[in-house]
Length: 254
Ligand SMILES: Nc1ncnc2c1ncn2[C@@H]1O[C@H](COP(=O)(O)OP(=O)(O)OP(=O)(O)O)[C@@H](O)[C@H]1O
Ligand SMILES: [Mg+2]
Image 1 (spheres, helix red, strand yellow):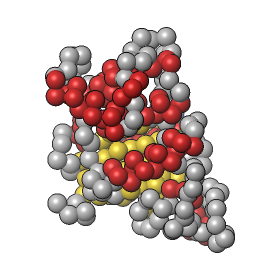
Image 2 (cartoon, protein in one colour):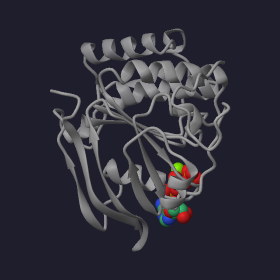
Image 3 (cartoon, protein in one colour):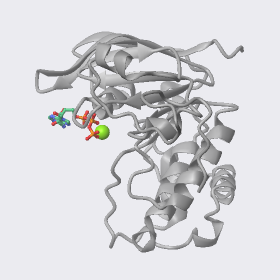
Image 4 (cartoon, rainbow, N blue to C red):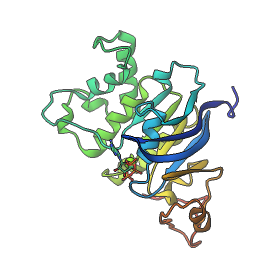
């Protein structure tokens, strides 16, 4: 398949909660090996859009068409914005990773040897093999993110969705994460919510602005005028000398 095969078609979605419309006019495709940056103000509806794509919220109107090779259940890996971790719950890193194989259709908690090997492999890649038996209550923010990242990848998804993965983590995890994502993006599509568009612009290919209205921007460069036109009042964070423009070749050095 070429890079231009469609994985997902978001066809004019309106969605929200209890009858209240939160997002509207969401209309874009996710292509194979895409890298979409999702931006917008707090409360704009970014997480709502993601939950709709994941099928956790049923849209009021419009539809999402899934074209992946895998079953819908495994098409998408998801790293949620907030992890609800019961610090006292005695579940190990490895069990959390394996739980990524459970789904609506599969609640049994017995895994094959192959699945366990896959878990080991993911943990190895993410550098958390050494802590695989640790209870998750004892992990640092970065270790927890790595664990959940393994969890979202164990089903070999064709699309990985990350909702602000760099919040509350150390710089080391953040720079490792970008390396990991760049590597993953050679084979799978990525959709990532981030407030720091200046940093992610090196990695992303297209931008989705979400401020109730959803706008698709088919480039990784966006300026304030365009953001205004999209009614997307976010501050562009620039680290270089060109103001008001997302830098294409931003070098992030920590
Ligand atoms: N479960 C829910 N029930 C009712 N309203 C909700 C629910 N979840 C979110 N909302 C409302 O929907 C709106 C959009 O929230 P959402 O979490 O999608 O925004 P966001 O862009 O992800 O914000 P943030 O940047 O803070 O994560 C907010 O006004 C929020 O209060
Ligand atoms: Mg959110």
